[in-house]
Image (cartoon, rainbow, N blue to C red; front, side):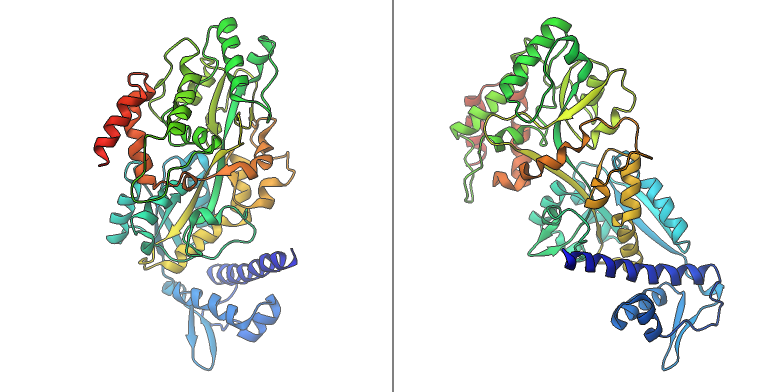
Length: 458
């Protein structure tokens, strides 16, 4: 534990020195032409190694704030010599509400007045291919990547586009594995979420039903859904059944994974028993509820408008439930055997070919550091990557629509699973997802899908 604390303390002292010098130069506390304190003096003052001091000074030289004079020291440059730097950051549009990214960028620019950030919203479809093209053409210095798209990048040989990064010891220990390959971290985690069950507390009270908890089975959910349908004439339960963040959970809970080898069998009995059981949860309510959602947050809007009493959702998407006319809460996903849920995470990568790599690294450090992580905690319902920030008791300055059981994710950590646990490439899983569309619509039965998949995968 002391080693972790020492690393955090070192990083803090290193960043304090870098940011203090930068601020004093930009605000003319250190005058143009003046020499800053020696490397030895800085090393002793901030209690870091001289090697670390030189690393920080090299960054300030690259930014045009200092000039290194051999055998003399480091001289503050004239104001007109300062170089304005522009960093182009590609990002998922959802991060505007999941991580208040535009706000964080403004805070960064206020702190680093010589750096401006150009935000470039990228399309979700074929995201990694878009990233490849943008980086190849020099249009991006940094880019946000989630754990699904990191798998795409890894499978398609795109990790060579990204610079190595250091693991932040303040972050949850299970996050770096989502963005690492061969023990190298390529993406710095920023936020994460688990898939959870969200339910209307008022509706449960009106129907005289016990609220969901960690002991709930899918049978418990189905029984509650039927009762709500009978008494309130709305859907008891709904989810985006075809989503890659939903149906794989049911497979993982049943212990299913695809067999190793170059070809994967899509005819396994356990696979189809699991998919049928998951589909029955929806259609046994007496209606045909699949595909009521066609866009992001449609499921949450159905819940917000009281068209359904329970949904599967993420902490990210809870942001859509800002002004409910009822009280809601969250609970772990029901399970029949193994408790499992999917872990989702988003981080930021630095282009290996960026001409502003040091400035891009400053941005990444800023977004992953305590101040930004605290801002995310205060303004959103996403879970910050910084463990202490995420878990500290802090009632003041938090969003008012935070559900009472928000912290249930802490008890779910041992149940977190990743797409890799299915033993299938992400591109093959997406192909399988597309082939299941008519099955989820209740327009095809397993044998039809199996036959088609067998023909297509020969």
